[in-house]
Length: 101
Image (cartoon, rainbow, N blue to C red; front, side, top):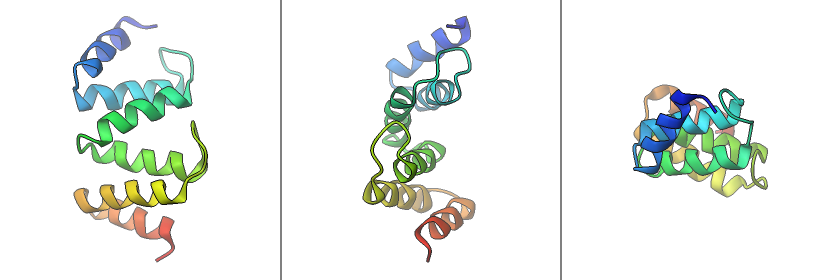
């Protein structure tokens, strides 16, 4: 594990949503740590619950595609709606496209 990621994990454990998102990205991509989609899902959720729009959108994608979890269209729609309600028009468009509206 990279020293930078260790610092981010420490911040994430203390509740920093930006750090939680960074840790989720690291686990999703395998940068600085072994790829672990379940761990990515955990950290995306932590950040998403604190209003991190990118985490909300990524969480929706993970639930939609069944990455790190079982596919769950209701949870995907929930997180896309959260992202759309808090985020810029870009996320609103993403939510609409994915929900086929």
